[in-house]
Length: 71
Image (cartoon, rainbow, N blue to C red; front, side, top):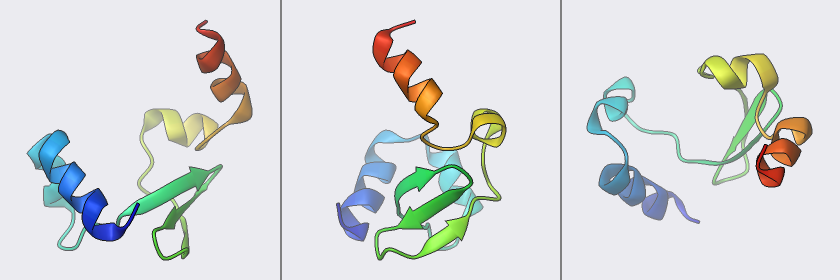
């Protein structure tokens, strides 16, 4: 998904107050562990993680497995 599509979906489907955190939103393509990548492939250390991503990281295989199992 390209940057423009991500930003359009953010504006259409997410609550508007989260956009106030950014002058220019960073469109993220994926996350893994402590890191996230933007749509251009640049890697960042995620200092803005929420409570869950702070404790388990992005795309934690144990969490993904349990979520897919439905328990």
